[in-house]
Amino acid sequence: MSKLLEVKDLAVSFNTYNGEVQAVRGVNFELNKGETLAIVGESGSGKSVTTSALMGLLPKPAGFVKSGQILYQGEDLVGKSNKEMAKIRGKEISMVFQDPMSSLNPTMKIGNQIMEGLIKHQNMNRTEAYKKAIELLDLVGIPNPEIRAKQFPHQFSGGMRQRVVIAIALACNPKILIADEPTTALDVTIQAQILELMKSIQKETDSAIIFITHDLGVVANVADRVAVMYAGKIVEVGTVDDIFYNPKHPYTWGLIGSMPTLDSSEDELFTIPGSPPDLLNPPKGDAFAPRNKFALEIDGVMEPPMFKVSDTHYAATWLLHPDAPKIEPPESVKKRMHGFAKTGGDE
Image: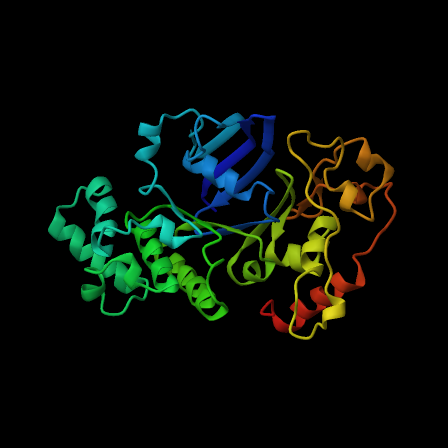
C-alpha cells in the first residue's frame, strides 16, 4: 500500500498557568492511501490534539509540538509556518469538525462557503466554483442543491449541516480527510447516513480517512485499522478484527466491555473505574495502572513497550511479557466479542 502519512514519536504540550500539560506523549502511526484509521479513546486521551497538530491548528501560543515528526508524503509538517500550512489545509489534508454549526459562517450562503476553497486552492473562477459547489452538494446527498446553495446554515438541519461541512472538506479533493467525531451531535439514524456517506465517498475518491471517536460501535462499521489512545499515548493498534475479536490491552477490554448491546440488561453494563490521569504530572510506569484491576507490580515502576501480537497487531501492556501471568479478558468483554462475531460488528 502507498504510505501517505507517518507520525513519528509525536509529543504535544500546552503551557498553562499551572505548568506544562503533556497532552500527547510519543505517538506513532501510519496512514495508507484509501485506508480508514480510527483513533479511539475517552475524552482527554489526546485524539483531537493529535489531529490538530497534523493540521497545524494547535492554539497559539499555548499549544506546541514538543518533539517528533509528521511526515506527509515524506515531507515534515512540523515547524512549517501558518502560511505554508494554509497551502496544505483543505487542498491536501482536510478536516470535518464535530460541531457543524461552529464550522459554518452563519452570515454566508452555503454555496459561497463551498466556493471559497475552490477559488483559493483550485484557481477556479466564480462560475466554475459555483458549478462544482452544486455538484458537491449533490454528492453529499443534499436535495435541490441549486436552491440549497443560496440558503444560510440556520435553514439546514444538524444532519444537513454536517453534510455541507463534508462537502467543504471534499471540495479540493484532499488526499487525507480527518473526521473529528463528525456524528456526535446527531441522532442514530442520521449518524448511520453520514457514516455510509463517508464510506461511499472514500470509494469514489480513494482518499484516506482518520476517524476520531470515543464510540467503538461506530468504529466497527467504518475503520480498517484502529489505534486506541489513553493518556496521550497509543496503547493498542491493529486491524478492526484484531481489536474487536482479540483485544490485548486492559483499557481496550474496558472500552469494549462498556459498550451496550441489544441483548445486554442494565446490570451487565461495565464501566472503567476512576478517571484518566492528570497530564500536568504524568504517572510513572503504565498510566492506566491505577484503573486496571489486572495491573502487575512492574506497571507502577516501568512503562510497557509495544509488544508484537502479530504483524498487524501491537499492544503496550506488561501482560504480553513472556513472564507475565496468563490473564483472560473479563466475561463481559468476551460476551461482547462473541456478539460481534455473531452479528459481524453491527450491534
